[in-house]
Length: 288
Image (cartoon, rainbow, N blue to C red; front, side):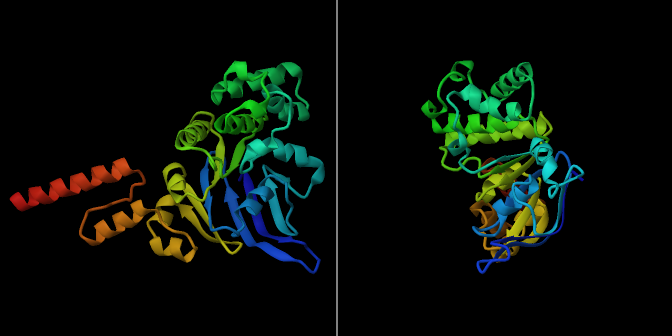
């Protein structure tokens, strides 16, 4: 297992009068190459969970092991960050260097790579994320929102982590920016073979992109399985405090009315195609 969490609990304000348990009895295994969506209502523990995965937080109870390294081993924290990259919500707020190049190069330089290796990595991630060379000498604060987001992600990718965790990566972006970021995430998974862990409030995005879904509710894992099992169970989503996408409600209603639906679809185009096929099949049956 690439990431394994065993009987994990995390408590903010541990051993103080202000203790608040954020996560309880978390047991979780993640293997290389997975694309996982983590969903749950605000305060369910999603951000705490992923910060435990790359050692930013360490559990008071239980163990988090990343590629054989226990996150409690503080001497190996840099090795863990090299393996698991975390892109926070609004990562552009973390930009701080004078130029785009320096911001992207900061991570690999901090890991001790040679200048030639740093240049190679910056060049590669800029090509992957479609960051033009002419932007590298600009201040990151002169860029558009979507460009800033890609630069922040590039800074994580330049460290070449095996696993990339993205916390609401499209928050605040317009539709064009969202599509571009999601296209990049899909390429990272399919072409670069990265393990992707995506936190999102948008169930539509998770349904479209991810293969496995983890639902958190009140600091506990309420569900862990395939996206089809998760999204075809409206009661499960509602009990977790989540509002299922309209496209799922529509298919549930159609199924109740006798439409043949073997597996739910998550794009409008595919659902429309499925409705047309059902209607055509029904008409053909009536003619016979």
